[in-house]
Image (cartoon, rainbow, N blue to C red; front, side):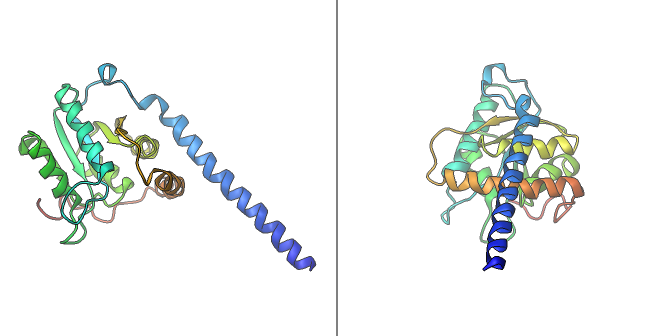
Length: 212
C-alpha cells in the first residue's frame, strides 16, 4: 500500500512538472515573439517574400479551411503591396499527397503569376520549413503566414536561426479542430525547443524534391 501511495505521489508530481514545463515553454515563445507579430496590415512593414506554411489538403486537392486561410491571407498581403513573391512550404513526401502543388494551383487560380511562387516540397514540419527557407532558399527577410496559435513557434525557430522574419496571423474563422490543434501545438513546442538546442538539420537539404 505504501509503495502504491509513493507511486501515485511521484506520478502526480511528474505530471505537474510536465504541465508547468509545457506552459513555461509556451510563455517563452510568446514573450520572445510578441513584437514580431502584426495584426494590422496597414501598419505592417514590407518584406520581399511571404512564407506560407503548409497544412492538410483534401483527397480531391482542395485546401483545408486552415490552409485556405493561410493562402488567402498571403494573397491579401501581396495585393496590399506588402510582399513581392511567395514561398509555399509543405509536405510532399509521397506521390499521392502534395500540399505544395495544391497551394500553387490555388494561388494561380486567384491571379498570382507562377513566376512569383517558389515551391519547397520538403517543408515536412515547421522547423524544416523555417530552416530551408533561410538556409536553402536564401530568404532572410520575410513575413510568415499561419494561424495565431502557430506563429510564436514558427517565429521563435526562425529567430534562433538568425532569420529576420515577422508574422501575420491567418485566422479568418473558427475551426472545428482548433482546440485539438492548440493542444497539439503545446507538445510541438517541446519538439521545437529540442530542435533549436540541437541545431537540427532538416530531413533533406535538397533545394527541391520534385516539381509542382
